Image 1: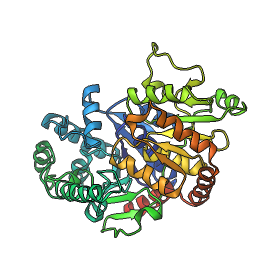
Image 2: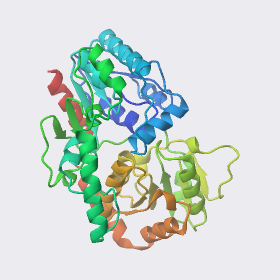
Image 3: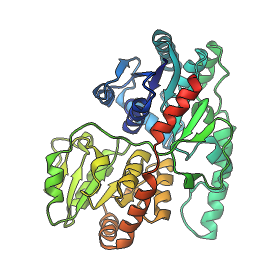
Image 4: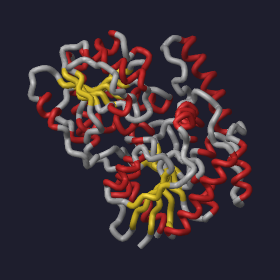
Length: 407
């Protein structure tokens, strides 16, 4: 029997739920324990029946925003000061020793790159393929510049070359990671990719997303992993589904913004549809939304098959994969390159339309949703994708890798 430590970023809904699914799929001979720093979604861990250790130091709201901006490629500044990195590595090493963890499974928690290696336990990272080392190293164009013209493609190729150098070779990792790594006897983390690459990188994608790419050692595909929340479905969902108007799901995860959430909700509210919107964490009590927009807490989206007619999503891999698995066509508004990739994969499959987040409050959103509802091709493509996805179980495949690694 082995103890497996899970260290997600606990203010990131997708990471928390992805870790929960992997922990649930573990061999019964193993046990799972979690640690994290922020309280936002830690309750989902305990509600799923797992132990949770709240550690310090946690990010302030401003620091969390800065981390998200760094993750989305909007800034090179991060809140990872020497003091924060040093304290987190200390806390994580103590947690690994106290629990006797035989392996550490992470989300995008870069301090684990130091703590797990300092404790000499294997580090596993279930992660989307977009913006991993093999993706950046091998992609001719990353889609950083949109457009089909020769000029747009040329500029995108040049931008991709610059990003490839900056990502894989430039010493852009915060100095705090180099210093703390050296203090703990770990090779210094110097590049961006060194903050995002574990010993075992488990790619949570479908086979088609890897066509044309060669995976280096340390990378393997496990397949989609998305949330299966234990929460009951709000009764309002079945009530709305029974009405003659189409029902649209607005799912924006935890990495969208309040402005995008309100803009999308109000635009959808102008349409002859009903909207189920689990965006309460973005909405203030003083906000006024249209009567046909029903704001809720998180819902078990994996149970929405047959209840909703279309979805509007932020492009996070979990929400996109849930829509694929339930056969729901969607409009995707990717907020950062990885999310744009997730949406574009589905656009090519025919079960989605892409929209820039800045157009969430415009007629472009209502026009896109109207197309999903009116054109049968989107529903047929969504059903075809659903039938392919039903054969995948990324959580179970990840658990099998963990068992193999820990022996």
